[in-house]
Image 1 (cartoon, rainbow, N blue to C red):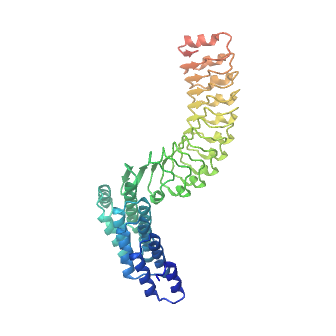
Image 2: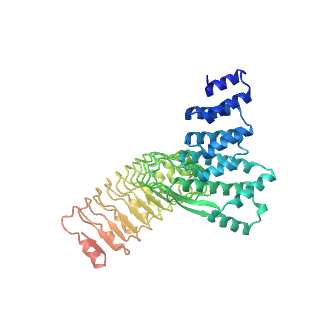
Image 3: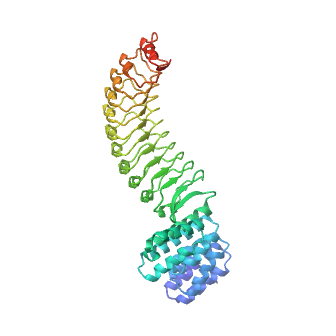
Length: 452
């Protein structure tokens, strides 16, 4: 009666079978059984027994590179790593080139990265020579030329194990992505992947191998089906631009605050209801686009984004702004249109760099007097609100060029507006004027375009 893989292992544990006999029985099952489950279970039991002989290596290597079952190939890759990590680099490299199954490719790639990372930590001079040989074997044009350029700026002998390992990691990761994603767009600089574009790839999760790309600066994942971001996203310390527009992301991980180099964050049309407090860590962030989400509030920590220049919150569910908004002194474009704001904090007057303020379609009944302090403001849109008056102090906004107060409940326009020498256009349609205000005629004579 043929023993099952589990029974063979149990007999081995009971010492009814010696190691050599148990290994031979398992190898026999792998080679002769018609059941892939039996074969996979036999491969796994080889690991439990610790079969580290050369013949077992050859059998597993052959399974990896030529077996018809992707489950068998995938399992062989995992057990090769476990039992023979010091000698499995070559078969893994071969398999990465020739394998077609996405799941097997991911396993093979993961094994290769683990091997290379082990080499990077090894101080043996022979290992450095090995890494260098592998880098020099790369025939891919952009890597080959990139390495030649690197060698012009420094001697080969001065490359560290980690530098050489990073080149291999980037190369194998690119190979994986090119085999896994049709028409992948990317950019390589000095043997490092610096840009990746996964637009319209139908992704439901961010490809894990991205986390190994320590030099990645730009990552585009727009128009996919992502619902969450992995915690490891915060490990991309070189990332400067992250585009996640048009997905189904509901939350951001706390680790997002670790992206200290990030300058652009695009999250247009997702399902965010809240931003994490950790967003304060994005100290270099200049642009954040959060339009078409479901945000009901902003964290106070948003005031720590001192480099922020553009904040787009169009079409959310905001009812108020945090007082900390006053610290965004470098902000020049603030879009709060299509929300549910009933008032603005007086602290908005601290935004001395603000050039564009869009408040269209909210629930505002008044504007704060501090609006007079927005000395750089050029465009103010407060259309589609419930304003009954415009503050007289608007005459201090000397840079104002375009003013839209249409679709409100205004009964008059303050005469102080005549002192706005930069004003070019004013939109006043659909208000509660009993007759056309005389001030509009006076503005028209000064060359201001009036839209009634």
